[in-house]
Image (cartoon, rainbow, N blue to C red; front, side, top):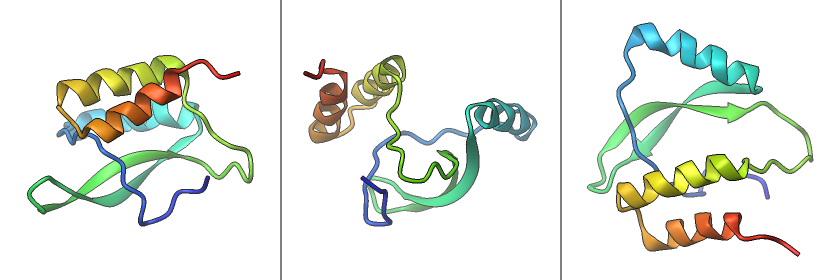
Length: 98
């Protein structure tokens, strides 16, 4: 599945001090991700320019996050009371396959 501009991703936005951005970029680069600035829309419709890190182009190879990373996303989603459908989708990624 390829991401598109119409895809919805739920999450939280945090302020990261400027002096910590370079360290974060370095860690993400080690895992083959680069920073992009995108527009996020909050629950009230407010628009925010935010930085996110995305995997570099890997062609047609499907990307799947590690189970421990999905578990972190799930815990954060539950903590911030994100929509139930999003949480169930994350739980589905933790279900054993086959």
